[in-house]
Length: 621
Image (tube, rainbow, N blue to C red; front, side, top):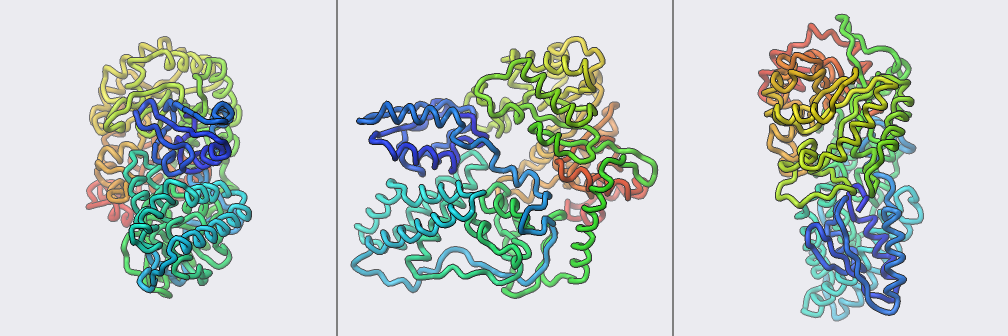
């Protein structure tokens, strides 16, 4: 599997649609996990197979058109199941304004509150429950077909919803329940709830959020069965338990000021669609009590959500953000020099060459994600292919310095051409550099490519997921002669942060990956809604580790995690002594602008480090 998130809903729907066009019985088996065989004509079965990027899938077929079906599936697989672009691209660049919405991260307006689920209390069962179900499914199919045809940018999402609606395995289970005496709504609800639970129990965070798609199809049919209408939301801020793609795609962005989602998570299809339309959005507001019509406001940048806010203050913030972006972009190419004379390098994170092309004002790249750059490959890239890609990134950035991270795989980042054994807890298993101590060949080719490019343009190399001095020594041995190449490591685990003086002894720099450092320090998975609020990069414990690294590393300290993309946090990091920040492209101008306004000597870092929690840190900032 070459797809970034494996056989998730959309590529699975394409496969299912293809299979069902042949007179053949097709099954899939995941050879890496042992799951299967499952019916390839059932979206629920294919999607919950949970086949991930890099997994080997065995396809078997029988019947009159078995050979034709296998040939068609092979062709689809060669095209990565039509899933060439990342489904989270919109989420990865949420600050880019899009047509229809404001592109801002602040919103204010009356609350338009949507409750959870569909009220079934008034439904009266009859003796024609199967017929009612079939009619409701037909109506739902018409609605989804219209959504598919009228929202071309997101039509694949509704193709997947249609495939789920017509899934024979699901329909058989519902019909069996009706035959056993259940009403159509009760049978439909029970089967779809079980399927949603199956998705939520998958070990991949992206796949877990596909349970939202299941519930979206569930509720669509339930509304039809009970005669509930889909009313056009009133003007204001939509407050929803979770956000489905159909709602996001059909909202009138001139009337909806923003969307507040109670559930956490940033990779649900509804969130992706809303952000791609430029609609202001915040997730994870929880169970805060919001009455319909009450004035509410949120600031996604700071993570704040308020009922009965100071309206003048919020409107002033919106005007400030609009002006801020315009001015920041105009001065993006200027250095980020603080009021007290400190110059901070602000660079861009690069996953594809286009990230470098689109970067405005970046002082180079502080993170080239090689596992993303070549993540669509089924075979390892050659040295020459890697040289060409690295050279293109450097040229796009005007031959400013680029920092290339060696293969960072494992956890949630598999490589299609490097199979890994299934681990009970992959985030605590073979990740990053650990993988290549047993299989160094791919790393050696990559280091050769890096050395070649370094002979032409400024290049730094850094090794990910380092914990011990032995790992650093091994990596340096593999690298060999540096020939002017600057070498560093990622500081992502608390052990590396605490012993950084030892690890950095023979290095030129260290770069703090705040995403993983936060996750490991707080023992909280940011994609798990039950504990997501704990995984806050501004937690004082995380900041204390960053401070320790700066004070003890003895070399240049950079940050390339999410905190570096937050203008407020960027000032704090600079005040702590970080001299290089690598941010997502759209944030580079804003981070530079905020640093130019800051006097680092006036930041009370002592108070921040002794703060009670992340909220108090934000208050101090």
